[in-house]
Amino acid sequence: MTQPSLPIRIMQMLRELHVRGYASLYLYSGLSPSGGHWRYAIGVIVDGEWPKNAHVVSGSVGSTGTPPWCDRLVVDASSLADAFETFYGEKLVEAKTPNAEFTRWYADTLDTLAEAQPLVFFADFPAPHAALLKAAPGYVGRY
Image 1: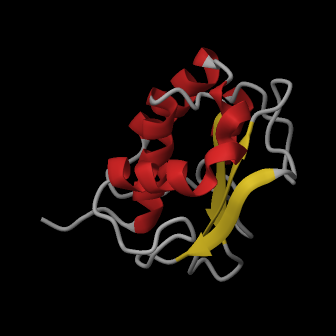
Image 2 (image 1 turned 90 degrees about the horizontal axis):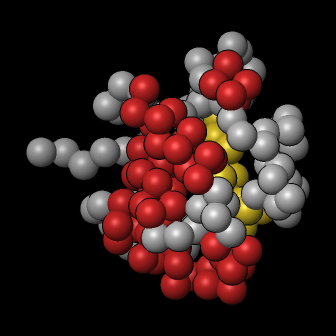
C-alpha cells in the first residue's frame, strides 16, 4: 500500500493537531503558477480571523520530500503532527484557543475531498476548492 502524498499528509496532520487541542490552527493551501507544487501556509486564527500574515510556517512541496519541521519522511499524520509540535512548540500556544466551529468546518471539508485530492483554495486558474472558503469560519481573504 502506498502512503498518501505529502500534501495529503499535511492536511491530515492539521486535523490531528485539531484533535490534540490546537483548534485555532488553519491551513491555507493552493497551487504554484505552474501547478506543479502545492503551496501551504499554516497559521493561527487570531481574533477569529484567518489567514493572517503572521503564520507559523509556509512552503511549497511536491508529492514527496520532507517538510521543514521534520528531518525525515514520515509515514503518517500522527508522526508528522508529533514533529510539528516539537519543532514549533512556543509558536503554537495561541493555537490552543478553542474553535469548534472551525475544526468542524475543516474536518467536513476534508471529508468532501476525493481520497488523494489535495486541498486547493488558490491557483492561477480556477481553484477547485475556492468556493469552500465562503463557508469557512473567520476567513477574511487572501494574503
